[in-house]
Image (tube, one colour):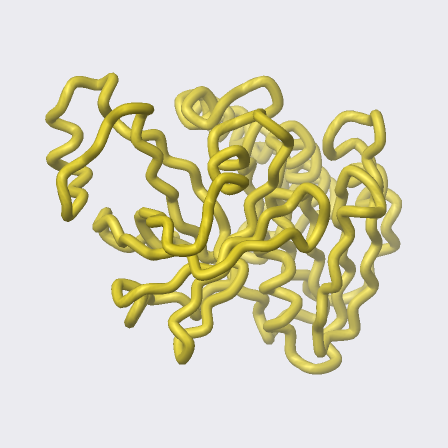
Amino acid sequence: MTERPKKVTTARVLRTWRPTPHVIRLVLGGEELTGLPVGEHTDHYVKLVFPPDGVTYPEPVDLAAIRRLPAEQWPRLRAYTVRSFDAAAGELTIDVVHHGDEGVAGPWAARLRPGDPVRFVGPGGAYAPSPDADWHLLVGDESALPAIAAALERLPAGAPARVFLEVADAAEEQPLPSKGDVELTWLHRADRPVGEALVAAVRALDFPPGTVHAFVHGEATFVRELRRLLRVERGVPREWLSISGYWRRGMDDEGWRSTKPDWNRQVEADEATAPA
C-alpha cells in the first residue's frame, strides 16, 4: 500500500449534495489540489483532519508539530475513499455517510458550506482491478461503495464482474456506470447485522471459471468471514485479493485502529490453513 507523506492539504468546499438520503457528496477544490497523485488506484483514500472543539492550529497545519502539543489537542483523523478526481477541473469528490448526530465526519459534512476549508492527509491506495483477471468480485457495505464505484468505472469493456453491495434500503442505491459486463446485486440490510447478507450472497455465488480478482471491504466482522471463505474455502491466492476491515461495529475509529493489529493476527491465523 502506498501513502503520500503526511503533508496536510487544505482544500475548499465547492458544493455539496445528497445522491441518497444518507450520503453527502463533497466536491472540493483549491490550488493545493494541483498535482494531487490520484489515478493509479481505485481505492485512493485521504484522511480528513478534525481538530478538537475550540482548538485552532497555526497555518500551514503541520501534524508533526501538532504531535508535540498535549494529546488532548491532537486531531482525529478519519479515512475516506476518493470517489473521483477531475485533475483538469481541480475537483476532488468524497462521499460521507451521514446518520444524524452519530460520529464525527457525518455531522461535520452536513454543516459544510461552499468556501469552508477541508484539510486532509494523503492520498494512499493499493488496489485497481487487474486487466489480467478472468473476472472480478467486488463486495462491500456503504463504506466501500465509493471504491467499488471507482473500480467499476475502471473496468475494461466487457470485463466480467460480480458485485454485491449492502445498504440500508432501496433509497440508498446509486447509479454505478461501467463498461464492464457487470452483474450488480443490491442487498438491503433492514434490521439484520451489517454484512450478514453479503456473506450469504458470496457463499451462494456460483464462481465463474478462471482467475478472480477480488475486492472485499467494509465492517470487520463480515470481512473476516469472507476472507476465510475466499482464501481457505475457495483458494484465492493472496495476490489476487484486496480485503480489509474499514471499520468495526461498536468501536470508534481510534478504537478500531488500536485493535486492528490483533485482528490482523487473528486473520493470519485463519489463513494458516489456506492453500499455499
